[in-house]
Image (cartoon, rainbow, N blue to C red; front, side, top):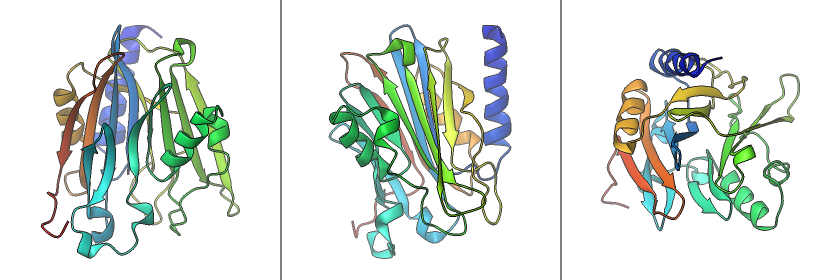
Length: 247
């Protein structure tokens, strides 16, 4: 497919899978903005009061979730985690506690896939939310982007591990995963290969583009981070809720 065709496909995915979809759930995108810089986008969505009680915070060069109002937290295990952090190879992004598993495994020289073998889908029946993870590898252009999708098998309570590896993308394109295909009860897990998405060079413009694409009722927080080797990351954060005075 031509580069023009790839950009058309990416624009179509932004429209169909995000803008016209009430609930794709949490999502992450890794991509390339120009010859020497890359972009990471991460967002969270929520339908219940508990899952909506969150915001994203940037602290010590890492992105984490936190409770917007700590007094309303029922169970922090599935909503509070490091979402994006640096590793020796580059950057790891995920939708849950598997960030810690990845960071530890990569430091011990495990592969991306090996580090996640012990992980399972989230224990949030009946949805069994998939765990989605990505690695932006700044040292390995032949395999620049790695993704993992861990979801529940359809016929038993066992995890299915899917891994994906991609080389460099043309500038202005990213690849991404979401937790769900669309809204529903229970929520249907995302079950496809990573989707192409468009990416601009400016994290503020990218953040606004994706924020406006997400359903206004269910969007909670979003971060767009521009990464260039040897330079500090350039971050834009959008939060639906401010931090509570109880924090």
